Amino acid sequence: MDTIRIAIVSDELEYSLALGEALSTLHNNLLIAVCEDKGKSRELEPYDLLLFDTDVEGDAIEGNGADAPRETVRRFAGQRRVIELTSSRGSVAKDLDTPSFTLFKYANARELASDIFLYDSLLTGKTRVGIRKENTKLIALCGCAGGIGKTTVSMGLGQALCRYHGKKVLYVSMEEVESTLQFMKSREDGLSIGKYLYHLFKKRDGPDQESFLISDRYGVRAFQPDKGRNRLKELNTEQLAVFFAAVSAGRYEYVLIDLGECFSDESVWILKQCDTIIGITADGGESEREERFTAYLRFLLGKKAESDLIRARNLTRAGSESGELGPDGVSIDYDAESVVRRQGFCTVSIDQDFGIGVKALAKKIT
Image 1 (cartoon, rainbow, N blue to C red):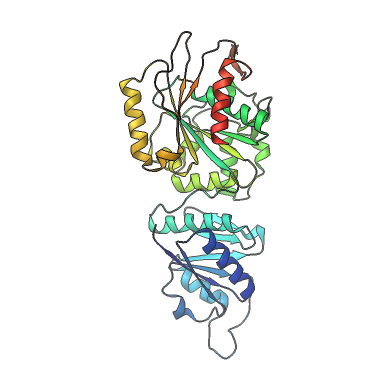
Image 2 (cartoon, rainbow, N blue to C red):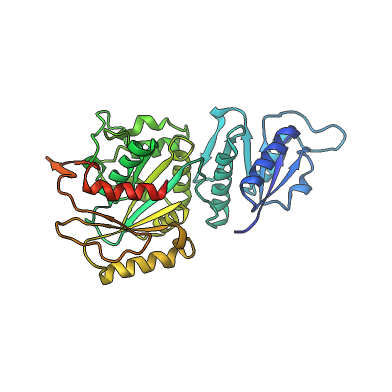
């Protein structure tokens, strides 16, 4: 990953040094310099991004003929390299179209780093941005075809993590038209993932996620789906990074991402950000399609596949056999009583045979 050269320009030396140390500790590809004097414009020319603390207003710095702080900001803003830092949350703005960023200077370092990578990627076209996580594990579940139980396994896995490991779990569906409401009851107010994304990106007010969430009886949470297409499918990688950074900001210990069978650029990017990838296959022996799916996963992930890929075979018919899965594979047995469908609603139980495999899967990722 290329180095990003950043100058922090502020009259508060202690703040600048603390921020610079925090950012460089998190990411060794961030080269940080601290500059107290906003007026020495020529010294700032070599840097890729300029973080200006705009709280300090006033005249030119006495004795050096420097520009006033705001004039210096305006000069560099024309080059679209400036990220302004403010102590007023009401002044925060993240305009992905301009782009123009004003960030809360006292946000935690991970949040600031995520926004810095996002802004840099918008300017350069390079996808340097990654999902910044605070004690949150991202788990992707994917498969080579629809109808093999990826969502059912996801719900069972979330239930196991909540019930037997005491974890806080969020389920995120990346299906084109998601099936979350087959497993969780809808909110009456209709506040959906689309409305959450509107607040996150357009109004930029960092909405409380709780207002947009639904849950099952064991505490697995999920965003209320939209009525049509899943709005998460409309986001690019930079926007997905902002979304996952928001949901990973210390609230949940596990985020289960149901990727479906899609291998879009965005899905591949998500796979590379995850701590664990669970590749789900169907009944019986390994088909040619499943072999190609597993081989492609290993190709995409490279060395990451050796440590982070778990194969799980979900047996959806009576008498099915798991076949050869290897030492790290998990077989999830068929049990008609564990998944009950009534009037379009699905209840998942992990108290019987289905749950044995799901619990083994949960144990592998904890």
